[in-house]
Image (tube, rainbow, N blue to C red; front, side):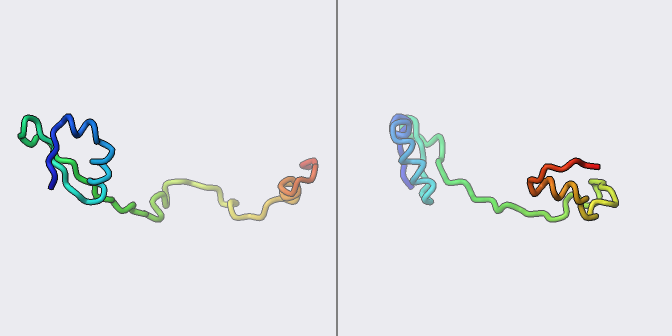
Length: 83
C-alpha cells in the first residue's frame, strides 16, 4: 500500500488512478497523516430483467396482423396511394 502526500497526488493523479484501477490501494496523506484512500470501484454486474413491463403496456389486438399491401410497398420504396 503506497502513501503519497496531497501535493504529489494532485501532480500524479492520472498515474495514481491507473494504479488503483490495477488493484493497488493508495493512501493520500496530509502532513504525514492518512486522510483518504484511493481504491478501484467494484464492477457491478448489469442485471438483465426480462419481462419487466409485462402487463403494464397495453397494445391493440391487431398488433400481430400482417401489414396492408400499400404499406409494404411504401417500405419497399414504391410510390403508392393508400386507398
